[in-house]
Length: 242
Image (cartoon, rainbow, N blue to C red; front, side):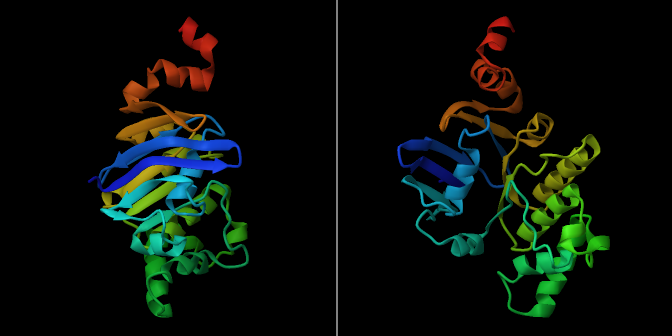
């Protein structure tokens, strides 16, 4: 069995099938990208993985253990962390206190949580902002803070949801460097991203979905040249004139 595996995942909201029989696996140490137009079901897949939503059907396995019936906190404790598309730091708390909130998953010792948070802030390039209120950080730094808070839970698998959205080119490059650095530290990554420079530049494999269904899977080069992917992103008229 693969390190992480989703089998025939389905999520319905009333009559709407947001995720329709999706299956994929991620190998240990890999960066696996998930792409698709807005509303295609990418974040819903993430929400099913960490059971923010309960799947309607299908099974999810992590290191051979079925997790789709577990509560969210237990899934995180097993080693699956995540960021959110819309960053929502604890605004009145400092950057350090925000990251400590993640560290408390694995320890109740304040000193240990603080040490872990400081280590992660340094790793993410936020050490100098450790005493800044989170609400005063830039969008780019809030996104880094979101990553840092997830890393403080000591994940083995990290789900990254559009960490480059809204960033300028320099900030995007920095985000790519952090993601590569996280992988080099031994963390496996499953990433949802709209910024093609990011997803194509860091992913080992990519799966494209549309209307909740898989339309393509392969290397970045295979995906960027796939007719169905081009249609989904740029329209059928563009694909025909390509």
